[in-house]
Image (cartoon, rainbow, N blue to C red; front, side):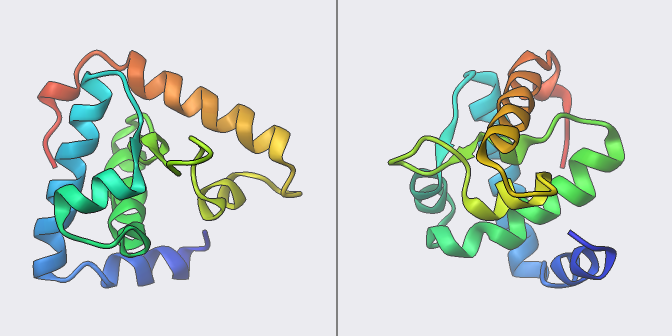
Length: 125
């Protein structure tokens, strides 16, 4: 994601969205503590958003919470119910040539880092 896309994603998190983004963050933290992935559908149901509308919250958490603080990438825990893999948008973010093998390996490492992180219960939004 380019710098302008990140700025656009953060600009889209308005006050009502900010509350939902905090809620998304807390559900992701709980999934990490439970050492499990969560589907877009499950997460959307918990926060009152349709799964396709979770993008701005997940982007904000990734680019404005996790990366600046050096935290593992919580958004890696969100997966498609059928494939049990992240959406294509997430995968495309991490591969230069779009190969599934590379993307899958990076995603697996990200999930392992999220689940291995010992202090999610101490991390605030």
